[in-house]
Structures are given as structure tokens and as C-alpha cells.
Length: 272
Image 1 (tube, rainbow, N blue to C red):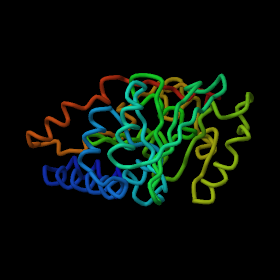
Image 2: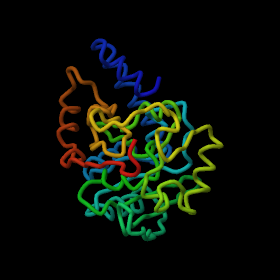
Image 3: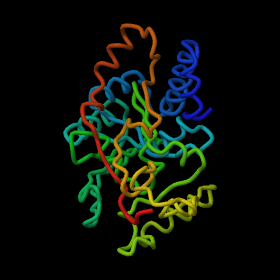
Image 4: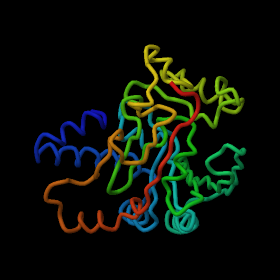
């Protein structure tokens, strides 16, 4: 079941709630445990740093029918990026190569520090946010499927119905000035996603040509729609049981620093 179906199961009863929590926790552990010799210590580090697992790694947990990535992508707040980097090198034995990505004037982050870590056949990518929230860096992803994230206590999929249908809208910052053509660096990525069965478009009317102007009733993928992580259009919630959580689970949820900040965005681009 994908996250949209699991959310419906959770709403049925306490047993459904427990089932969804167990399913998501198991999927998360199966995804990331091969990367770490000390799994629970890494989970604690995620709590301490406010890190989130995003991109295709998060999608593989929330939408298990999708392909599992070869690299685990972790987003971190600016002030704790090097804390996590030092932990992975010192405790988990990874080797790191640092790099700086420079974006153009339209980029969410003009300058992004990244680290590519390797240990044997395993690879981890760390991406530093330019703010105190790791979620801000997620907005630099090139399509609507990739800002999904998971943490040890929560999950969020901002565009669940699009992703469920394997549809992805290109972020308008990655298009030419006309808004009708992709920037050259993005074309190979789009071609790769299409080979994997995704429908990638710049504007949602490709899939819904009868859509009328939506100033009064904004669609979640509309250029004018003001969105934030956890809003009514997201499928989001606690990874842990909602009803009667243990004291340990309550403590972990209380220590969640990811939700200290509300991260807002709108897609921009051509209106419906």
C-alpha cells in the first residue's frame, strides 16, 4: 500500500493506526539499515540534527511501488551539516568528498554545500540547507515528487496524488524564461524519469486540458497555490502510533526539531 492508502487505513481504528505505524517503521528500517552499523545511533543523530531523508529514498518508503535509489539523500539544517558529516565519517567509517553547487539567480539556494560519502558499495549524499530548517533545501528539487520526506517521527508527501499516478511537474525555476522549455542540464534527468514510466510536464493542463482558471479554487499544483509542508493537500502525519504511544515514543516526538519552522512555497510559472 502507498501512503495515500495507508492514511485511509490509519483513520479506520486503533488497529489500523498500529498497522500503519509498524509498516512505515519497517519500511524505513529496511531502507536505511544497510547503510549503518549502528542503526539506532543514527536515528538519534537524525533527531539531534533535525535531518530529513528526502528525494527518491523517501519516495521508496511512501510509495513502495517506485524504484529504490542507489544513494541515500539526507537534508540537514545549515548549522548541523558538519555535525552529521563528522558523525558518519568517525562512527560509521564513511569517506567524504565535499562540493559546492552554485545555482543561477532563480535557484532556491544560490550556493549549496554537499557531501558525497562512500563506504564499500554504499553511498550517502548530504545536502546542506541555507537556513535553520532542512526542509528548505527540499524546495530546490527539480520536480514535485522529490520534496517528500521522512524522519524518525514523521512523514510528508506534498503531492501524493500526482506521485501516485507517476506524474511529476517540473519546478519552474528549471525552465527557460518562456516557461515552456527545460533548461539544458535538466533534459537528461527528464528523459531518465520518462524511461522509468513517469509522465513529466511543465504545466498540469497536460493531464487536465479542461481545467479552468482557478483563482477562486486553487488546485494544489497551481502556480498561485501557497503551500507549506503539512498543509491540507499533503499526506502527512506521525510515523509513530497516534493512539497510546509509549513514553519513549512520546519523548522522541517531543524532541522533533524539524517542525520548529513552517516552510512555505508556491510553484510559480504560467497560470491555469
